[in-house]
Image (cartoon, rainbow, N blue to C red; front, top):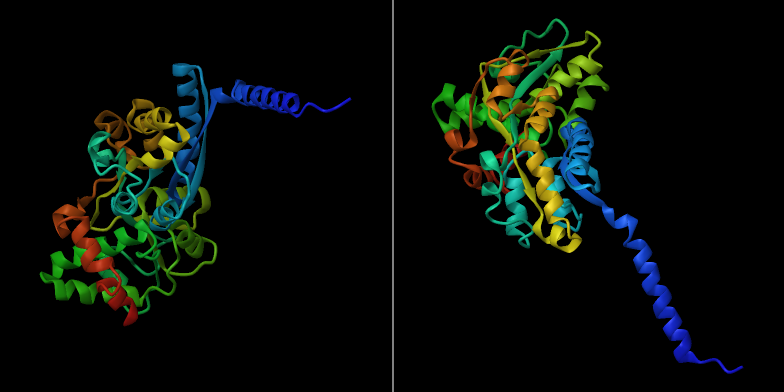
Length: 339
């Protein structure tokens, strides 16, 4: 019997259509998101994702799975620029979202106004983690420049954690030395005491706690608390310096990706969840300082009072910081070259 090619093509089209129908049936109710975040937020978002999935199911009847990508904040931003299809980004510094605006328009230039508090659901600050008993007597930033002190800090060029440490030290020195020259000399002395620059905050934590390198780790408060409680076993304690930096953690929708994936609504819901009472409570339990005043007050015992300054107050904003300190050949590069 001769083969009717037109009949075979028709059968193929029908089969293909049925296949698409099967794939778009039950599976379509389950949406997948990718959140590109910085490395010391892993545990936080593990709990956020679980809670959001339940909340979204209750609200819409649909299932959602949120996958995570973690690394140094600036490296994560570059990964998104390089093709990592993250639906949302949850970084620890504004420049790592601003660069997504400037390079290819991946994020809306108005991202700060899309969510409360300049799109920052929480903040933290830089503190010291020292070995039990604080054998080197480290109390403030000036102790980190003393001879014989080994300081563990992630690389400010690849890590928001390291960048905040650098700026916190600079702000302290500027207040004490009363000049940019004095602050530069102070920070240069501090980085002479840094034996290794890990790519991110979690790598620096591993160097300090597992490799036993260094006398003090400078890191975010939440990371220090977690290390003290979960890995410390009586080996570490936290020291709060006299002044530090307000490290706000901004979030944004990656517009080009959500439009491609058709995930704008659920991505917006995911980031809005961070500002909800349930999300803020989870944030506080992970030792980040929530924006909700009532929840912050309820957890006040876990957040010792500390004087802080913002990048805007002390440095004139992130754009000035990027140009002066962290551009290629900028102040930080010159400091590291002289180490």
